[in-house]
Length: 39
Image (cartoon, rainbow, N blue to C red; front, side, top):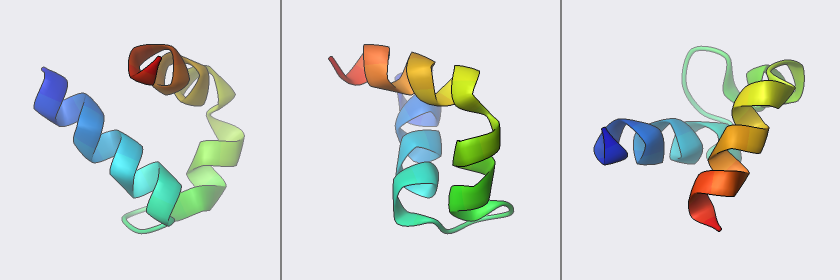
């Protein structure tokens, strides 16, 4: 589970992947969860 979260986090921060950084802006709930996980 941790590996999946980390992979998603890297995809959002680097702006690569299916949706890249635009998805990070749209999916604010997901970004918040990732920030909470990192902290």
